[in-house]
Every structure is written in structure tokens, then in C-alpha cells.
Amino acid sequence: MKRLLSILVVPALLAATACDDPKKPSEDTSQALTKAVASVTAAAPSASAATSAAASAGSPGEAPPAAGATRFVVEMGKGTFLIDAPLEKIKGMSDETRGHIDVNPKELGKSTGEVGVRVFTLKTSTFGDVDKDTAQTEHARNWMEVGNDATAASRMKYEWATWTITSIDATPALLADAKEDKGARAIKAKATGDFTLHGVTSKKVVAVTVTFKGPPDAPTEVTIKTDETMPVSMKEHDIKPRDKVGGFLNGALDRIGKKIDDKVQVSVDVTMKATMHAHP
Image (cartoon, rainbow, N blue to C red; front, side, top):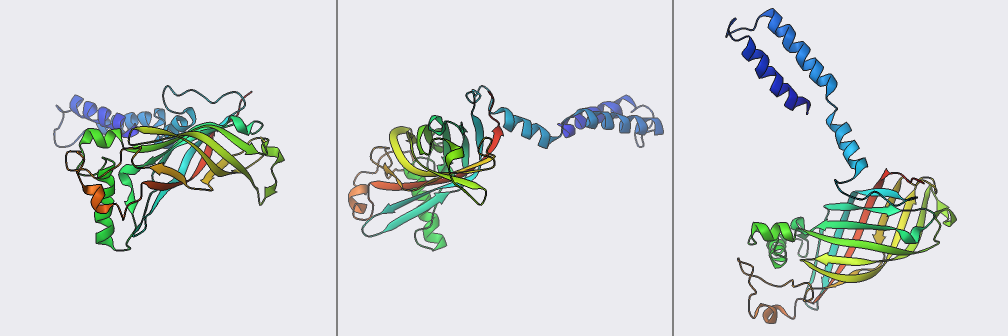
């Protein structure tokens, strides 16, 4: 914002004094220019402050957390997958994540939120060979219609896989009752919600460990890690070999059927920071 306002102010001042000397601004002009830029700089909020405020406020139109809940926003994380087929174990990951979760430390079971993993940047690491893994990565992305062969509309539509958490069956249900270990409290839970991939949503109940840092009544950080993999059916989510226009390649699955299993084992590990603290 500072730079934009400076860009707008500077040409105006130079234009106003162009008749004096086109090669060298007068002393008065230089002083005026310095004062103008300084006033703009003082008036404009810093980029980091604006970003922080936006993060605390949440996305435009997004409902605030319920009474007594704190909103935690994803700071870092990853989603990994494994296809444990008889002839080949295909594995990969994406470390681009986003989302949030709202948690009431006194009623952990009412926790809700959504975690997104960007499949557009998914990479495989099956072979340990750069060329082979790069080729397989592109194939995997095209199967989900987010690769180079997909249309721009498809890449945008299917760019993210999301895990929407609607409730958590936690033990204990009160964070203060959890044992503290080195400043952290870990809760074993079952997270219920919906997993959406390639435009298809399926119900999931997944065992997770939710670890909190900070005071039990006002935690500052939460980490959610799946304890077991989330099984995802490629057939159910319409993930399959495709040509350059997104069409199904007839016979492709028959040719690779012994190498590819329908079930994909998905794991998620994300760390979130408190941005909207609990309110009465």
C-alpha cells in the first residue's frame, strides 16, 4: 500500500513542477516530494500489520467461531498418500495446506473446521529417481485433472482436497483434564467429517491425535495428526488414467491393474496457530 500511494503521489508532484526545469526538480519540489512521501508512509499501515489483521479477522464472509471457541489457522502441514499395490508401492505428498479449526477447550467434542491439501502441487517419490518420479507425478496429477494436460478450468476446480471436520469424539472431553507433558496436552480422538477429492465427497471417521500447547483454558497452538490412514477409493472419486482432454483411456486400468490398487491411504499432519481467541 505504501508503495502504491507513493507511485500515485510522486508523478503528480513532478507533473506540477515540470514547467520549472524538466531536467532537475527545484529545491522546493524536492522538499515537497519528501514531505508528501513521508506523510503517505506514516498514514499507510504496514503490509505485515495488514496481513496480521486479515488473518485475525478470517476470510471475508466467514462466520466467526462459536461462543467459547478459539479459531486456529493452519500455519504449516502436509498430506501424504500411499498406494500399497502388489507390484509397486506408490507414495507421494503435498506440503501446501490451508484451513482452520474452531476449538472450545471446555467442549472439545464440538470442534469443527476444514483442512485443505493442494493436490496441484502433489509430488510422488516412488522410485527415488528424479526423472521417473517427475513422470509419475505428472501422471498422478493428470489422473486428478490438475496436471499440465488438464484444462485451466479443471485445474482450478480440483486444485484442493479438503477434509471437513464436523465433530470430534475426544477423551478427555475437557482439555484441562488432559495430562500435561513438556508444556503440551495430547488428546486421542475420532474425527468425523467429509473428505472431498476430485469433486466427490465421502464420509470419514478417522483416529487422530490432537496436541495443544499453551494454557489449557487458552491454548495458542494445536496440531492434528492422523493416527491411521484415511482410505480413499479412486473409483469412488473418479480418479483414473486420462488423455489430454480429460477423457478416460479405455483399457488403461486393465493394463496396470496388477500394479495399482483402488485404495489410497491418506494421512494428514497440520499445525495451527490461534488467531481468534475464545469469547464468552
